[in-house]
Length: 206
Image (cartoon, rainbow, N blue to C red):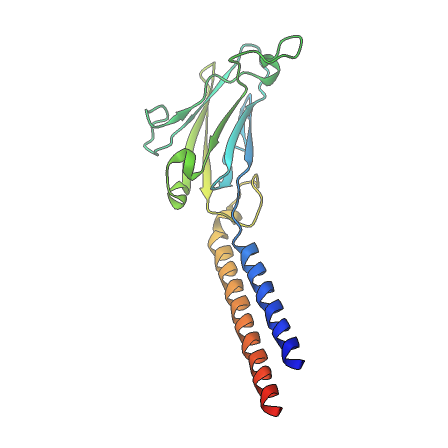
């Protein structure tokens, strides 16, 4: 009877260990990071997001007859409109893309999306990691420059604001995650050994 209770305890410990590992290893599915296009440039101008997230530019500049176009230097060659780079169509203010009845006007775009995942970019996960320069050009010819920094998965949601601490603490966070997994694994192993010893000693006493 005592041995069967001990076996149940071991099974529970193993299940909990697997659950902890599965939570720690769960993948980031990706979300939209909204970048607002205003009269004086995009906000935030230099966002940080994770692999599988999408940069979503939305034009809210309501000046009459003013459009914006986004150019992304995808291959980091310093040229924004090369054959391998990405560019949007002319982006109109959202309110101007609907008629008086609220029906969306055909071929009128107010937003532009770039998704940083392996399928869209045809790149491996860690090849996607890096900094992508972009420029927002309005129809007056005014240019606003920015950078999108794409990092590996962290245990935060998409859309967090770019700051120096996030970049500097990336390696530290990854080390802490690894240390936690090692501690969990060690604790599970020790627990299994102790329980196994208890079973063995219990059998010896009979």
